[in-house]
Image (cartoon, rainbow, N blue to C red; front, side, top):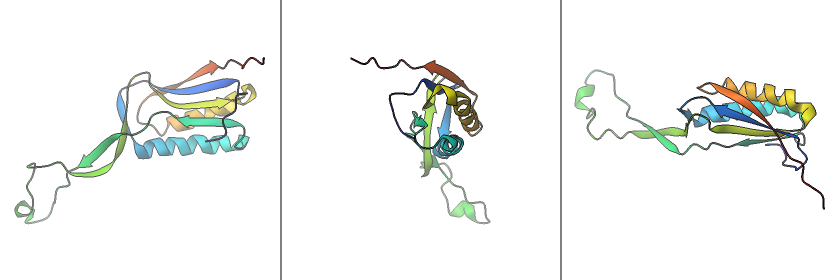
Length: 137
């Protein structure tokens, strides 16, 4: 989201503090929460990138809970289930989001990533990395 430009001063990283699976809808909710806070700067004022991608297919074996259900289903025999969603496996120290902003917008970027933190199922922290300016030749 936003626009990638080489003149940003700071990179903010949202880093995982645990080993979990993050469902695709939690990642999307975190992305929407962060981008909504960053819309104050306009599309030209930031660059937000979702680093983790959900690859794991989650499946569910739904059980019938009505009278006579024991004659209709097989229980755990051949219980692969139907796909219900995707999840990203995240290890301790993995980067979930990267955001680039100007130095004067650092506080807005931190608050946006803190809004994204509340949508994720584990503890996270924000790392601030200063970016090197490209040398003109």
